[in-house]
Image 1 (cartoon, rainbow over the protein chains, first blue to last red):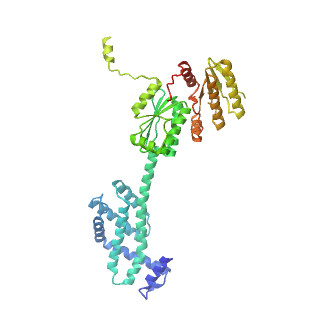
Image 2: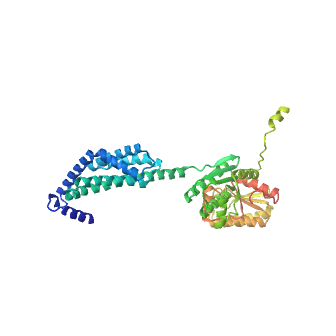
Image 3: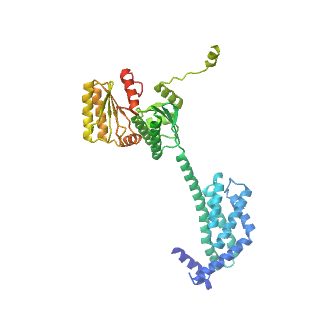
Length: 314
Length: 126
């Protein structure tokens, strides 16, 4: 609403004009005509505008992760796509290009700020050139901008959204990968399982880990389980509660659980926030945990150092 | 249906065959209590392998069986709690307290051997 009013006002400023008749098919046609004119203008000045844009990008310290040549190459591609969108009005090709571009530049650490920055810069560079070209005829300039601005904004939007979507896709993919990092339940000795947990424990994962462990206990007829949480970055009361539940559930199935790998920071945090783990058997590191487990199971590990000599003596 | 209670040496084995009503649970408790006295048993095993649900009443009764047995001189071991049941129990906060548990009947017997033959020297569980 406000937009159309503004447009009306703008088109009225130049005074008598065939375009003053608002919002008709004539208007749409004239927009198309103007866009065509615009496109040919951008085609003609391709080299110069492109260079101007690349220079402004470097000046603004954008895309610092990329070399001059790369910037220029991408700038050319974006420029051509830009013109193509203005000409055809279809953003599909640009969308595909933006996705492809994002895929290439995200791993190199290019940020959203930079991508939006360069697209907006191009918008400014082109607008400036339009100002320069039509400065004599203010009315015409207004009409050209009316045609140009929505299209330019749509392009900026498309590229920005494309970039953000690509990022989100990568983030989702990584989350999935983290979630699927299976938590293996491994048997190290008859009746002794170890369960190394790496990464963040959330309620969903805690549930999955517990279920896997319980199944493992039944399948391997385990008596002792060593849960190693060296790879868990932080333990709060929620995580501690999950651990306690896992330990209790294992105990119901007749298995003793030893928790290892509580770092001193984590231990201090747990004491500070008042989590009671006294019911849990905890041992400093995985080695100690396995040794304790072996003791519980009645294993005695001895060195075989002298064995070859003894056999030789016999 | 009454839960069959088998006498195996110095131990009693209560092998639950199907889901139990509250009344049947209490009956099991009373039967075990009586038989521990009659056979002078040193240990009791309650096999719950077939139970796929364990409500608070069942848990309380099992705890009662263990405590009664203890007072009459028999150690009680609950065996065969299924993974799903164990998980549900901890989620619902149904604790068996100090009652011993074991994976299955074989484990339960081994545990009882350990507890009763070696006297009070508890090796596992601090």
